[in-house]
Length: 469
Image (spheres, rainbow, N blue to C red):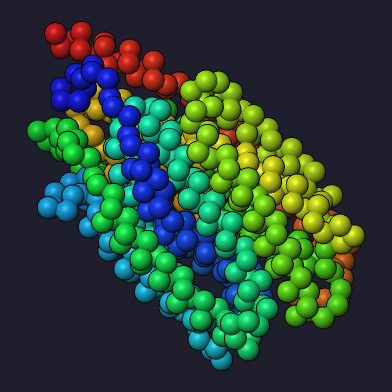
């Protein structure tokens, strides 16, 4: 049955192919992480739209982003062009993503709160549609480059390494915006920087589409290709797929909740009094330091996670990563200290190291699900499964963005208050750690139940071959 009957050793992917795949992930990471980093700082801190209102926008557009993904994944699975079935979407996503970047980070001033809320909702809606056009086909392309687990782990390792390159650089953006180097005020500085960001998204996306070849051999296609609805039913009854999606979704929910609250935590605990403009500069400088250190740790680890998994096993590494993240959250409330601001680096390094292992090790699980789907159904649907995988964790991001905004608003935090109340400080500390820890405990339990690995897939393949002989 096509690929399902092959027993010859698969040649290793060239290193340059893995690196180019990482380069192509940079626009994906820029689109996603720039929004998460800047949306509260700009639209609440500068335009005073309100954390809860911004969180509601985040939840709405992330839910749209999640349910839009299966459509794009299914379309790309069925696409056949002279440029391949993934690259046309990657190009379209890079072009539209660059344009929407300019719209999002050049907000109108002088508008009423309600008008501004509708502006950011519509632009963010377009922004994340462009993101899906790029992200889903590109993730699917990485899964279908090789059927070998070692190569999938390596490709996803370079993907996460690229993400951490972005995370090393982006924390300096708020500091640059508030420093006055690019403009007379934060909004003017952001507007000018948005052109740099759009250029990187467009240029790197087009370069990756040009340099990174799609697989030479087209995936197996059954005589009747399952459609979107059949794919959804298949995904919902696939236990290993739901477990893999749940692991990364819960880990991401933990990550986004705390990352959306870090700016407020620094203003409340580390720089509680003084001129607000100066406090914002200090807070963003500290975020630049801690964010860079955490991302640099993740960047150094990511390319080696696949090799470690081959020697130690995926599950032990995931257990260790989740325990490390829980520990970092438990100690985090005591690391936001005005006397030693830089000690906060410890939390960021520990948490990002853990999430790096989770990101690298869960993505290849989708490849294993696709292998099993091919054995049982006779077709490969990386695009569709990638989309439903994205749907799960994007729903969690939507919930996390909304939850983060609501938790900040419910705490009573105010930019104009010199020193927050004891009740506000206590609620911020609890919110920052408690919900993420619960999510990580759930992820730990899902790891315990995940059943697939290379040996299990090989047994399923052999059983199907024996049955059809």
